[in-house]
Image (tube, rainbow, N blue to C red; front, side, top):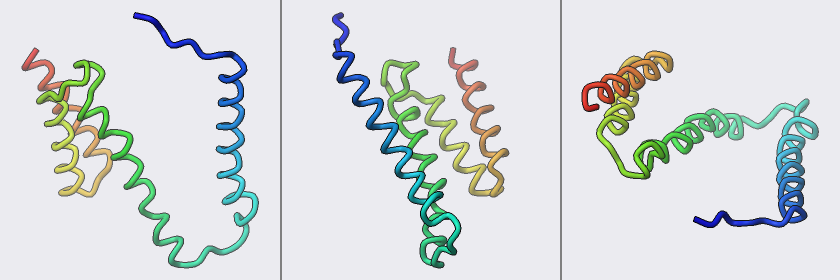
Length: 112
C-alpha cells in the first residue's frame, strides 16, 4: 500500500497555521476577555461544552473501532450503553467510567 506523500513545506505550513489558530482561539477568551465578567447566557452555554465534546471524542471509537477494523462490535457498544446508564443513574463520572470499562473488559474476556 502506498503511503501518501506530503511536501515538507506544506506540512510545516499546516502545522504553523493550526498552531496559530489554536493560540488565537485561546487568546480571545483568556487574553482579551479573561478578566471581564461574562454574560449569564454565555456561562450557561459554556457549561455544556464538556457534555458536547466528550461524546464527540468517544462516539467514533464505539461506532468505528480501530481494534475491529471499523466494524461495530457488541463489547464496545455494551460498554458505551453501560457507561451511559451508570452515569445517568448515579450522576457520578468516575462510576460511569469504571462501570463502562468493567463491562468492556468483561465482554472482551468472555467473548474472546
